Image 1 (cartoon, rainbow, N blue to C red):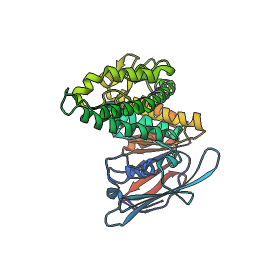
Image 2 (cartoon, rainbow, N blue to C red):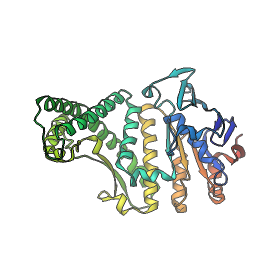
Image 3 (cartoon, one colour):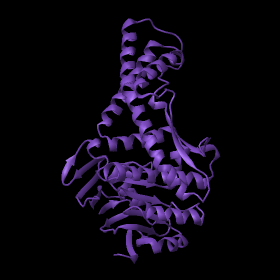
Image 4 (cartoon, one colour):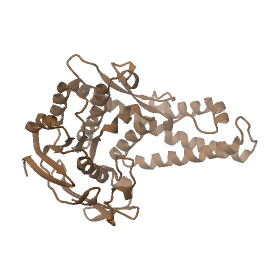
Length: 375
């Protein structure tokens, strides 16, 4: 149910299981509907938009509400109200004020055309994806991430006091002791973050490799994942000591730069082509798109494996820039998920998808009309 969200003044619709196709001209509201689901999953847009911008023009607030069942048939009601710059969340009628109590309750994995920034963009994007997934799997980690962020901020501030000018050290025992204290907080929380991320990437790689192989042409290229860190992450018991040593080795650079140069805030997730080449530099557009898609599907598979949770899969304009073979193989992968939303403005693509779809909806001016399949 939508009220005054983007171009939807009022929308009440019940979607069937299977592949759900949303078609219509550009600007009709296909992506807006997926954006509403994303809001209800992550309390934010996948676009660089402020909350005020998603409220329909001249409306005081926007409402997004959904009634769902998990894979065990248990019902869930999720409601989000955007008003006056605030987000008001309820689960089964009860107010929720902490993000860690909400994340993962309405789980979705989302691909949109800008998702190639997952591979090509700033490492911060990839770190955020890993951390969100870890918080969903282990909500208690949100406190670890917050403590690390706080320690990092404080340590950087102290570095600027210890070194008022690049390379020029102020001899103050109190500042030196304070820097050491924040360094230890960084080591304790940061080493845990790096271990958790590395473990997650290993699991995701085991899921992504066969998924990509099914999407690529026969005997085609392979894509894999690797967690890159300046800290030696083997063995587990040594990670904290290794991080401490890496910070000590970086002391001269930090004296000149006056900020923390080593740690999970500088790590990266690397996509490799055929096990050795950086996909960012050597991958084609089709390979980049396929890698981003299979990464999202690997995250969905992880949920099904670890939490018996089948997330919604949202694919916005996912088939464009793919050859017909990859399109067909992607649709076969989609059939393995209980509910998939797929948008397309191409009549030819819709004709390709329709025989496999649970329903096809024509989107026009903030309204939906079921033109094929279940109503």
